[in-house]
Length: 118
Image (tube, rainbow, N blue to C red; front, side, top):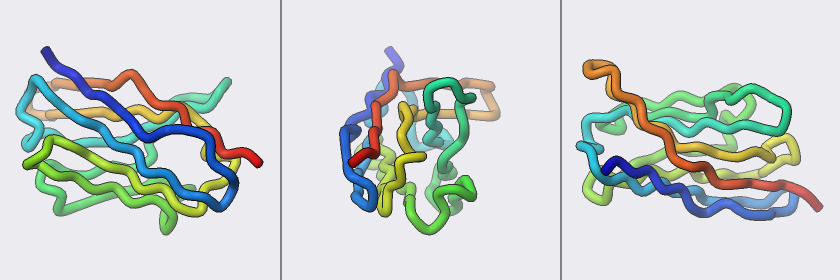
């Protein structure tokens, strides 16, 4: 059974930090590209940060560049999003996604809420 379980969300003040984790199981994690998306109320889901299967390449939304860092540990089947200098506009539900282009497989986690507010 494929599972992506996010954790680490919560309430933080502006300027603070959070570290999101996504634990994968039920598929060959090391061959999948991993991406964090987020969706704020009333808005479309948007890409936040992505990382290739080997971790050799990453990409970020312009809005989070220099503040967020994505990383992965293929030995532990986890992908992490370190979020620093958080802003109220970062408030959203954050989702973990696994994608394997060769097989057109796409898996989603259930999401974790991040709220940035004073």
